[in-house]
Image 1 (cartoon, protein in one colour):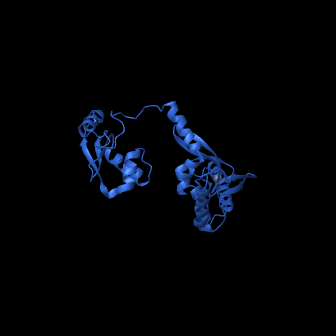
Image 2: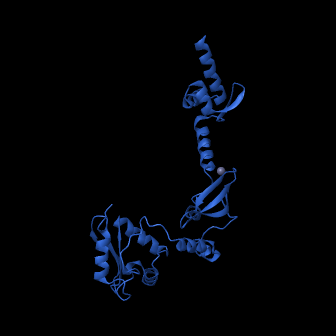
Image 3: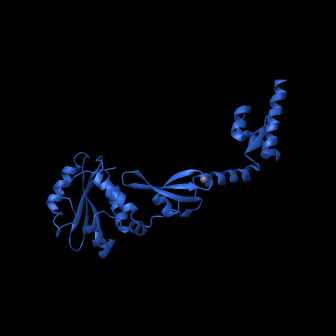
Length: 250
Ligand SMILES: [Zn+2]
């Protein structure tokens, strides 16, 4: 991670955008991603990118410096290239400022909130709508998580309520509250061990295998291995260990 100042240049016109970051390499990647996905906050740069395409831009690092000096050098570069003058550049602010650690202005917060509540905006950004089903999740309510970041409150088929990022839902990464994965892994475990159930009848009650593990003082993997080797159920394997213990204590 290297702090420094970078420049994004439209090769033909030499108009450029200057910025600084604590991690310049990462920031340049972020800029590329934002531009490609039409989400760059700088409208001038985004419009120009849309018009000319990525190949007509160059992304370069002007200098590396200590993180405390980056705003000083950014200001020098802004003034040198005059990028805040429209014909020379895309920068909107004249003064190099850092956004890190600055709390969001209430008005900004309010306008972001309005934006998210606007159905047109949500449609443009491909944000899922209330009532939509994503695998096992049904979307209930859009909630503000932190300033400017929105999440969906979802209800899973298993009954749990679950907060999920809009981006994850959009990509189809999430299909349940986590119950799907745990079901699948227990299914895989069953296939692997031949164990029919993860519950056993013990001392007259139905308890989980983890609880049985605790009460017997024997690892559940040991119980499962026994079941696999002997081709018996988990129940029978557990009983085997109970009898084993009883015999030992006699
Ligand atoms: Zn669930």
